[in-house]
Image 1 (cartoon, helix red, strand yellow):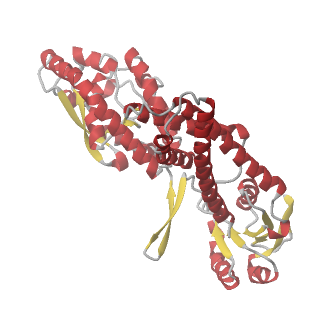
Image 2: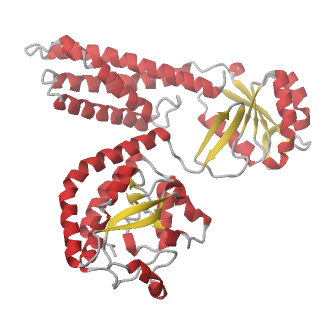
Image 3: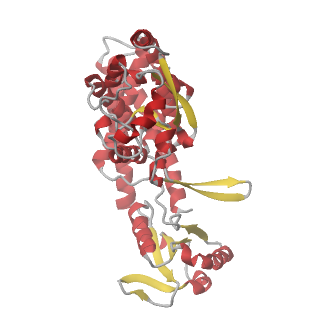
Length: 472
């Protein structure tokens, strides 16, 4: 069994253990509640009916938190905080459900006792197991996983360091194979170079080797076939470091197309489950907001019609996810026919980069100035969110004119995510920022995206928009 398989198996066992402990704590908490509050008894079976909901809710949150991905604990504080955060979300969610269902029979004192005791038990058991395994019951050295690394460069050294740092199970790097014949690395004499790639067959026969990991650049990839043949003959697991192409990737994935394995390099960290949650969040918040916003939108539409001739809404082709064009809808903030006048104003463009911006733009109407300052002209884009063209949070969608003026390939990375109503740019200065800073913030959002970051941006957008700061 390899070290990653052991970690996955340990994670599954720990999850089952946590669920069993939660059941035990649930039953004990009820007895404790009855002991301390015997004057006000609570119905046992009514409370027991909550157990499946508690297990489903808590199990999902614990699995999502990532605490089962390995046995190692970076710090006691971070681990305790992870458990505490899960239990806080769980009790708030459960209390909300109880309130909505008007389940008055549920004892609040029972819930408090249960969640406090559950926190203590889950933390104590996990820390005790870690202490017992790593300090008392670690496998003997001869039973360590024996790893042979192909390569002696920086990749090989980094791999060895990460194996020792992150592997929960005993790992023994027995040595390194080099392309050339030398016994040690002059820059690192302690690096045990035990031979060359040509003698891998002999080394696998003479030594105990559980896994061979190839950590060399693609310039010497021609030797991989002989390595693979030798591993197959000896029944030794073969692995490859997937950074052989010197690409900065956020996620790697191996998929199979029939009998063809495809290694996928994903430059953007896009967890499908989190994206589904993001989409559900967008739809829920948007559908809840539209009934409230419809009267406001009606008033704005009437004001636009009274202020200047033309339609209340403005449609423009924008570039969306994966460069797919879509029709974005806004309230009209300019006089009709202003798009055709853009070429005449290009010479007085005040913005750097591909975007167009001038102060006191003569094309903007009186109502349009107010709408732009308050960002109310963007309200109809809620319908783009519903249709899936946009998200509530994401890089602002750009026009075809602006995209055609991009002069750097990295600028197009912003199309790897769904555009949004607001993003880091919106809460960091808006139109006062140069395009280079705008792009930098968009790329920072893409590289560090999380559901928590989306929520934080939404909360910060509200006061920024109300103040009207940085708007043009």
